[in-house]
Image 1 (tube, rainbow, N blue to C red):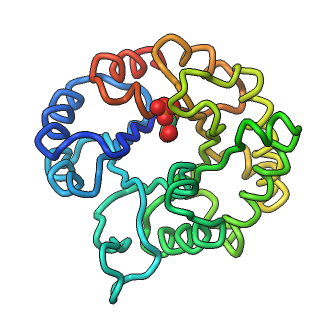
Image 2 (cartoon, rainbow, N blue to C red):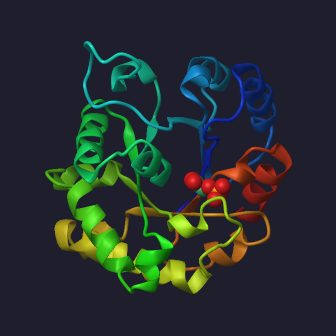
Length: 244
Ligand code: PGA
């Protein structure tokens, strides 16, 4: 399967900064599928810059309603993107997003032809209590509730152990592989083993040019969701080269 590299810029880069980066990124040769996720404010300008480029555009969040009195929210129809990151642990933690809300967002994204990148992952406390799989299994079950079998081909799952995000601590390639294989087995119970093999499962959490190769060697790891190391073009381009 072709690897996928998603850059999650979080709350970084003005529109002008995003444009400078993307202009340079377009010149980087890639064998992987690249998705850039700037802030809402930069989406339109970046989409114009990307034009027919192979690089795809993603948002970092959205609301599930299509329009109406929801001050400050952004609807799927307003985004103009191919992908949307949903249920990131920072949204769950700082903005109290629940699995139920994330499930509504996943369904709204699919309805609006946007591919959800659904984030799941356990905290350090949960891992230490040996509850990591239980937590991730529960997140998958709740966030994917009522998603139709034929829609799974448009879903991407990102496993992001909370303790590895922005901390410099990565899960070992083996720890990540174990969880990825678990995620695939959970999904295979819904859509069957054959279709589950096509599911893209990304790893996220302190991925950088030094560790990406060993992470990508794992069988069930189909790509990476990259925060910090996606902010500088040199390190982002390096990771793209390393997976070619
Ligand atoms: P990080 O973030 O690469 O900075 O750890 C990953 C993410 O939160 O998506």
